[in-house]
Length: 444
Image 1 (cartoon, helix red, strand yellow):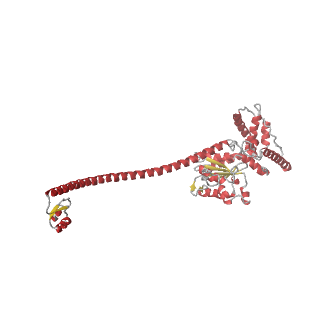
Image 2: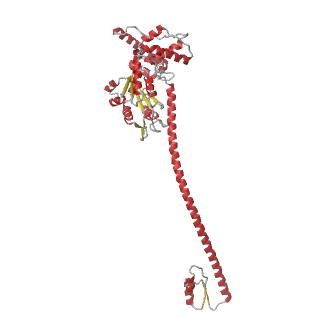
Image 3: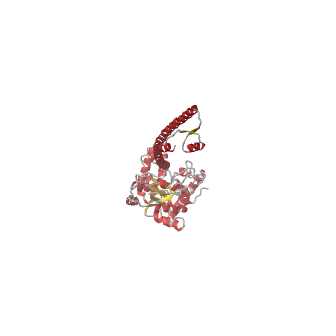
C-alpha cells in the first residue's frame, strides 16, 4: 500500500485488502485502502466489491476530467472577462470624459444663448428708443471742435466723458466714438441711468443669478457682460446711485465684477463712454458723486455745445429732419421760408437738438402744402441782455412749467409708455425728467 501510494500519489487507487487480522484492517485503511474483506470471504462478494470500486474509480476519473475542463473554461472565460472589463473600463472613462466635455459645451452654449438672447432683447429695446436724432449734422466751429476731439480719442481705448445739456446729442457723439474705434465690430451697449429703477440698476449693470433676490426667477446677463470686447455708454452717469459708484469704479480700475447671487469674479474688457448733463464738480461737493470715480471718468472730456451756440447749424438740421419725417409720414414738404428759419434761429432752444426735432416733426404733420408750417409759439425776442432777457427767460420757464405740469396731470404722473407724458410732449423720457428737475415739477 505504501509503495503503491508513493509510485502514484496523484491517482485514485481503488485498493481492496483481504485480511483476517483486525489490526491489519485499521492499518490498511490508514495507508490508503478503499475497502477491506475479512477472511473467510465469499468470491461473489469480492467480485462485487471490486466492481463497485472500479465504478467509483471511473466516476472519479470522469470528475477529474470535468474539473480540468472546468478549470480551463474558467481560465479562458476569466481572461475574456478581464479583457472585456478593461475595454469596458476604458469605454466608461472615455464616455465620462465625453460627458464632461459635453456638459462643458452645453454650459458654454447656454451661456452664449443667454448672452445672445440678452443682446437681442437689448437691441430690440434700443431700436424702439428715440435717443438718437440721426447722424451728426452741422458745420459750425463749435461742432468742428467736437469732431476734432472725437477723431483724436476714438482710436484709443481711453475712457471718454461727454458733457453737455440734455438733448445736445451726447448719444450720437458716443456712437461716433465707437464707430471710429478698434471695437467698432463689437456691440455698443447703452445704459440710461435715469430710466433704470434704483432697486434693479445693479442687476441690470452686473447681472444676477436665479434666486438672487425676490422676483429673480431667471438668470440675467448684465450690460457690462454683454458689452465685453466692445463699448458701454453710460448715459446720465450723474444719476447713478452713490452705492453703485464704488462697484463701477472697480470695473473701470480692474475690469472685473460679480453677478448678484454668484461669488465667481467675471473679467471683462470694455471701453467706457459716460455722459452727463450735471456739473459733477458740484455733485462731488454735495456728496452725491465720488471724486475718485470722477477722476477715472474724466480722462478725456468732450463738451457738446448747446444748439443756441451753433445757430448756423439750424438750417442744416431743419432740412435733415424735414427729409426724415417726409419719408416717415409720406409727406412732401420741400421748402422752409427764410422767416421760419429766422424764428427758429432766434429761439434759445432749452431742449436743444432733440427739441428742434420734435418741433419739426409736429410741423411736418400739420403742413398741408410743400412749405413747412411751424405753429409752435416761440418767445424769441430780439433782446438777449439785461432785465429784458431775464424776464423773457422767466416767461418761457413759466410757460414750460405749466405745460408740463398740465400734461402730467392728464397722464396721472406717467412719464414713459404710449400714454406717457414724454410721448405727448414729443420728448425723450430722460429729457422730460431733466426738465422736471430743473423746473422743480413733481409727478404728484
